[in-house]
Image (cartoon, rainbow, N blue to C red; front, side):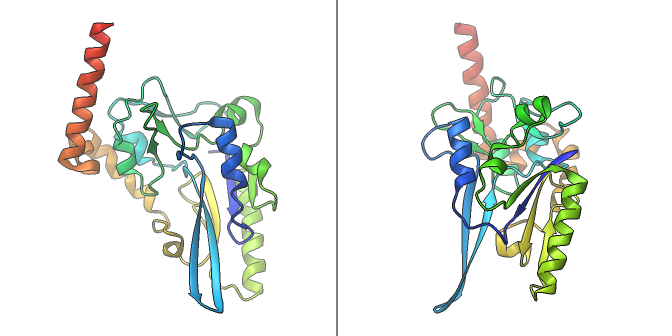
Length: 243
């Protein structure tokens, strides 16, 4: 992806303005959020520390959700400013295969629409109009930066050096190699419930598994998950024939 986001979790105050703005613009059922804030508490009174993480689709370089989708409803947006992972809502059957495959646990199936919901990186605004994402515009403390990937990496590295100079030795940028959303964190990835750095690139193995069709689905969800997908496909076919 040429465009990217850098979320500075050391600046984040956990206000959820990004989540509220996203919900306002994209809707979805009650309780379904494309962007949600996760809070981590460490230490003990009176020395308690809070960390926050903006949890949304990471738009992986190798996306397990895209590779495992049985109906190819998950795709890459084309164009100079494209590359983000998007969902074709008409094609999506709400089977949940992507939910089981995502290493970040991001995709959610909306109980009302029966469609998968996740961050789209404001694909239409970014790819077609060259505008910023809604969440970046909404952040009141400037913790979410949007722009050209290489420029954001340079910006992030400068911030990391400043934090390390202030004694925060674990400051680092997460996702430089393999995700469209990069996080500036102050601690180990495990402290933020993140997969190890570079993990999603290993998802290339999904390509080999996916060539065997149902085996990929079973690998993500187990036998029960496979039967759910099979039944859902059958149900949709019957609805189509009735129509």
